Length: 178
Image 1 (cartoon, rainbow, N blue to C red):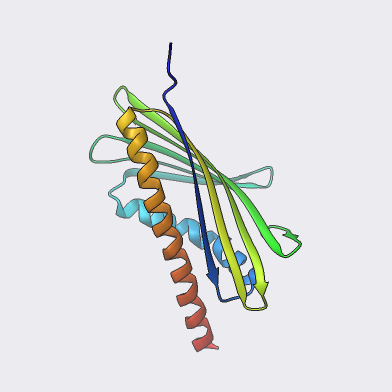
Image 2: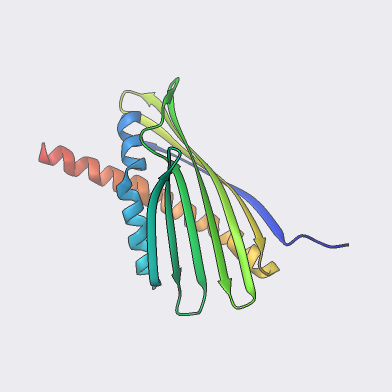
């Protein structure tokens, strides 16, 4: 029997920010976050980095292509709605999609992510941020699928903590300037 080379996993990260839901949502989804992500990719020794941004039917599309010193080629396509998401009751909800295709010689794999970001207003100056990722990886070796799955949890948790920390620091510096 043929076995599909596929692995699926979910990541849910939840945290609280002491600011109102609208300002947290605006900060989290600002185009500055894309610029910060690009700087992170560059810092990871990305060679021949090419980036395009476009809008397709109300969706902001960021397309990155680069390779590493180890000979891996990456194609990363990120999609997120343009502008502020509509409020739904006591929360703002934004959905995104991310497709990462990686190749080195005959080896290749694709990781697809559907994400939902929720910004739940818990009080006038308290917002619960919930980020849910549904990942599917096709291709690659058993070891690559296993490593990717376990590494993603660590990376996403670290990224979430860094985002909340930067938001807190940004808020403090704005208050000092006012």
